[in-house]
Every structure is written in structure tokens, then in C-alpha cells.
Amino acid sequence: MKQGNTIVIDPVTRIEGHSKITLHLNEDGRVEDARFHVTQFRGFEKLCEGRPFYEMPSLMARICGICPVSHLIASAKACDSLLAVKIPPTADKLRRIFGLAQVTQSHALSLFYLSSPDLLLGMDADPAKTNIFGVAEKNPALALDGIKLRQFGQKIIERLGGKRIHPAWIVPGGVSAPLTEVDRDAILEGIPDALAIAERTLEWFKGTMERFREEISTFGNFPTMFMGIVKEDNGLTFYDGKLRMVDASGKVVAERLDPTNYSDYIGEKVEPWSYLKSTYYKPKGFPEGVYRVGPLARLNVADRCGTPRADQELAEFHELQRTAVLSSFHYHHARLIEILYCIERLEQLLNDPEILSKHVRAIAHPNALEGVGACEAPRGTLFHHYKIDEQGLIRWVNLVIATGHNNLAMNRSVLQVAKHFVQGKRLTPGMLNRVEAVIRCYDPCLSCSTHALGQMDLQIQLISPQGEVLDEVIRK
View (cartoon, rainbow, N blue to C red):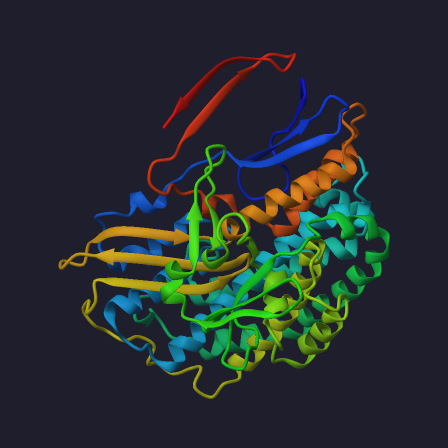
């Protein structure tokens, strides 16, 4: 919709949550500025105050229907810290399996359901066709693979957690029940098909990249830092490790940062035009401290994956650029490599001799009044930070979500794409779809990420069809 010198894309389609994009034009119809507005607010941080700490994992799973497991893991790890316990080794492995299944199904949703319409049908395709049904019509096998791969991850979650959405199986101190031999064998049985889907989808995707040279060069293709959790050997991980940050050249900026001390080096800022917080690297300041998280960042900060097929693909991925891989278009590529890794790693963990052990939970009372849990969610680094009182009741919560980490980069990406593709005097669906498509590269989860930091300003404008501001209300 065009309002005077402003183009409004509302809502942004094929993402999880509610948002809009505004493009501000100059008198010549060229894009001068652009903003990605997150228009919903949920505020889970305040809702949890006064609840017993041991309820937090199951409550936090309700934040999101797409990635409940990531919140379960980060929350339970924060609660482990409050208990001051080391969870049993088998519980550690089972949590990892749960998380890998989560990443697989979430990445499949992003790639096949939300972004493959652009990749298969093209950025200029009829908007009525750019959906999973359009994909099924054009390439039935691709659509079916997407459905099967997502089911593979969801069924693992269901087998372990009892249900696919909002499971409460991960608890403070470990998990609530061990893995059975029947469920282990059933999961292992599905791995060959899942691996085959991941491999052929990777080959299909790499074959499409030549068609999108212009998008690759303009979809968030600029220097930033990248951040992710890595293992001791700087390998890819989703569950536990230290934070590593590299710059656009691939040079290490900081490493072995303790995630529990995240507030020492990550700042959070609220803008008046969005409910989504923007994070930044404190030593660089705001907004120069922009960095990206998620699949692209994880593959930029990791030296290896640690599984044979994924390591081969990672080596090829690193050949895309001599520096860090900068274009956000390559989030799709990175997502597929991570799916491959997750399936390979699942097989390794399920074949571990200890995986059927019945000792899966450590029991204790609170031994600390503050705890931080961190993990890698599908979209990037996730922090849960809790403070409790002597009775174990939550008194303060801070959630730092992947989409917030990416907020500065997403806004800069929207501006870059809009400046390149959008002509205000001659709008086409393909122009505006590309502005949305760059947001889909990041796969933002807005239900997870909308929280307030202190008092948030709210600005509402009433704009005439000619673009004139008729009235304005500002609440501080």
C-alpha cells in the first residue's frame, strides 16, 4: 500500500508472527529509508514473575509453537544453574537429541514452506501461487520431501516429549523420563530417508543459486560481525559451549566468552517504532556493534561440524567467499547444511551405549538466586536469565532472543534490498516480494522475541491518503 511518500507492506507474509515494513521515498520515488516494524507484543518476561522457578521450562515452551524445545532447553539450563547441579550424562544427550530434532523440523518449515516458493517459482511469481500449494503443483517431490522432513523432526519430539508442540519433557535437573528401546529404534529407522532428503535438497538448492545472483549480491550483503556458540574445538553445536564472534573478514573478534556473562558484552536497545529489542556488541557500541546470529553465523564462526557429510558441505560453503560468507541469502544454504548435520548427529547420539540409561534427572533444591541458560535455537543464540527469591519464586526474567540479535541487520537488509529493487513510481509485486524475502532469509520468530525493556515508547500516526500526518500520539 502506498501512502504519499511511504510504501507500507503490511503484513509481511510467510514469516512467524506479525510485522510490517515501511519504505520512505524521496521526491524522485527512490527509497531513502526503510524499517522493519514488529507490531505484536507478548511480554512473557513480566507474565512469569511470581511463579515457582520449576514451572519455567514448561511455561517458556508456550512462548512459541515453532521452537518450543529451544525455550525448554535454555530455561531448563537456567534452572540447572539455580539448582547448582550437573545433570546426568544421559539426560545431557537426550536434551541434545530433542534440540536436534527441533532444529530439523524448524529449518524444514523455513526452507520448504516459507522460502521455497521464492526459490522454485521465482521472486516475480504470482503472489497467489507463492505458497506450499504452488510448490506442490510445480514440483510435487520437493513439497513432499519438505513435509516428510518436518514430520521426521516432529515425530522425534513427540516420541520423547509426549506431544509435538509445547512438550514439558525437559525439566530442571534433566528430563522427566528415559528413552525407550522401541522409540530409539523407531527414530533410527527414519534416519536414512531423512538423510536422503537433506542431500537431494542441498543439491537442488545449489543448482538454483545461479538464478539469484542479483539477490545474493543485495540480500543483506554487507559487513557485520557474526556470533554463535561453539564447542571446545570450535565445532558446531546447538546445546552447550562458549560464544565466539568473528568479523566480516572471518577474523576472530572474541572467543571463549561465557554465555552466563552475556550482559557484559551484549547490550539491548528499544526503538520507538518496534516492540522488538535490538542487541549490539557493547565494545563496538550502538549501532556499530551490529552482528548476526543463526545458521549463517554459526557456519561462519565454526571451524567444523563434526559429522562427515556436513563437514564436506561446510568446506564447500566456506569456498563461497574468501572472507566470512556475508550475504543473508546464504542463510538458506546454511540451514540445509545444518539439517544434514542434525540428522548425522542424531544417529551418533542414538547409538551411544548410555542412551537408554534410566538415570536422567538430578534432584535438588535451589542453591543459587540467579541463573542463566543459553543454547543455539534454530534462528540463533538464545539466553534465559532468571532471578528468584528465597522461596524459589521468579522475581525477574530477561529473555534475549535470536530475532532480537538480528534486528539491526534485518533493518539494514530491508533498506539495501529496497534501494536496489524498489521504484516508488512503478511498483510491481516482485519488487515488494523481494523486500519481504530478505526478511524470510533470517526466518524471524516474532512470537518469541517481543518483549519490553523498561518503559517502551509508543508512537501512533494518523496519515491521510496524501501522506500528510493528521494526528499523532506519543506515549513515553
